[in-house]
Image 1 (cartoon, rainbow, N blue to C red):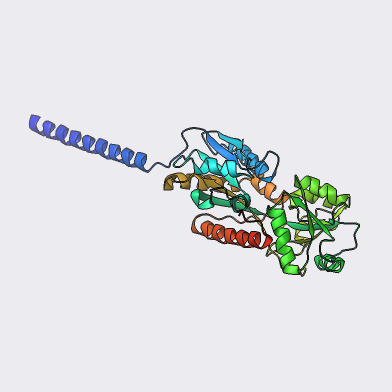
Image 2 (cartoon, rainbow, N blue to C red):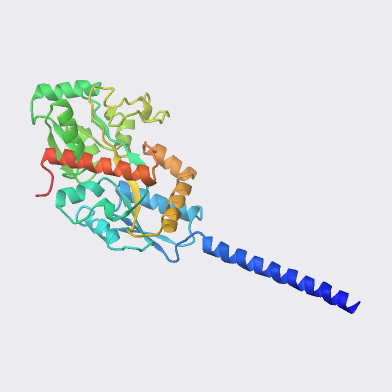
Length: 342
């Protein structure tokens, strides 16, 4: 009888010990496979000044992440605009292996190193995701007689080279590069007039001080809604999908593509996220997953529609392929325009 009890006790102890070992092994495996998360605040670099498109998007993302509790750590927006954004890009390039630093990018990712010769290339960071593409629209003053992009381009041709003024933000940046691309495609030649920001460009166009602009939708929507500006075409392969009326008669979707309108030119601006070079696959996956969650929020969707963004999202090999092609496009346009650093 004693032996039987002893045997049963021994058997129970063995089973218990086996169970404990299994639980310990499972816990160890779970810990080993646990997804990486930031262990301290993450610096979110904006390679541009405050108030611009990149800064607005970065701060919106910061707010969404806080509101929806998508991160356990803080996301701190830091503007580093020196050298046309070179300061910001170099700070991330130099943070090799640091997963607590990310950057929002626009097309100065390409234009700044090409125009200035600063020792930086996008391949020296870790591409995380394309969040959207920012559109460009050809705008004219609504009091002018041009009803279509073709009518306006015909008028520019009839006026002769360097007679009509195209306003844009900055020099050797997106607006001027797009203007050069349009000149190449249509055989025209504008006087390009640079301003500090898209808001000022829109005001100058309303005042008749320039003849046209290639502002982003958000930069001219107020003047368009007020009937002061006319949207002639959008520089993209497809029309904008947003069908809610913005003016009394038009939605963003009513604006034809420039190809449809007889101006065969495309140009969209990157809104993407990169991380420091040399981070691990788990760390990259964390940020990709975080950005997917941001995109799913109603706040983000409302922002995309109000700004009439192209909502293309890319990660991985597709994003790298797009970046390679975009860099070459910028190199070609800037070389033809004489914008490359010597």
